[in-house]
Image (cartoon, rainbow, N blue to C red; front, side, top):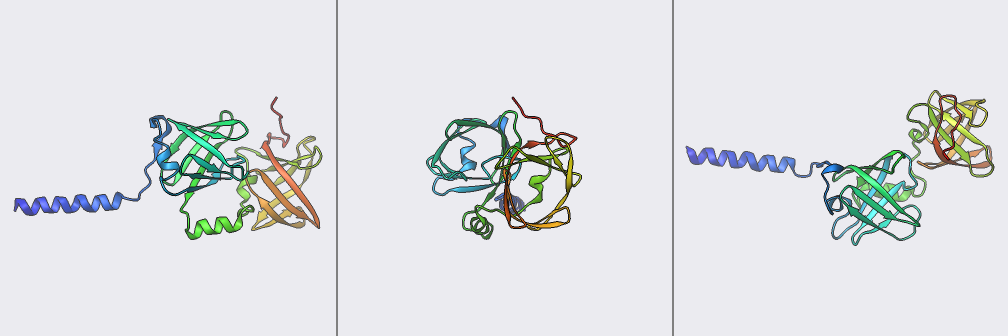
Length: 235
């Protein structure tokens, strides 16, 4: 009887182990030591691809490769280093991110005074990964990038000084004068700009490009809008 009970407990333990295997284990940044984070960022023999899910950052995706190499949308070969909860991406300057939490499928980090960034892992070779590669550099249009934390987001035209704020209440405001321009909403890849239906070619955390009745418009994200739709430039 004792042998049967022991076998039963072994079986239960084995089932529990199998059930738990593959589940994402999230670690708080404060508990990371040395190279701990690197075991999640990249594997020894293959790269790991991370796609930005929330927050605004020029690195809309990050591909961590063996040997501390990294690929970003800029395309310039770069390296990275990990020390506890600090992730340093070596670009033209060193960007030192604080890792808030990390797991097999999720990375949450941020720069001082900037948005909290959440990246999700995509398995290389999977259908989701292939779809992302096919869409690069124009990732799936997601209206969430126009939504602000409180009031809205402000976007500057690539040429000239004019900037528009896309407010969470569905209005577009001139960021300099607080004058209402029109209403907006996004359906699929269509931008409803007042009564006009415009085609969005790219809407990412930092780039917003669309065709305005034959005229290509390119806008760059510059920050969160104020309650009245204006934008406060940080000195």
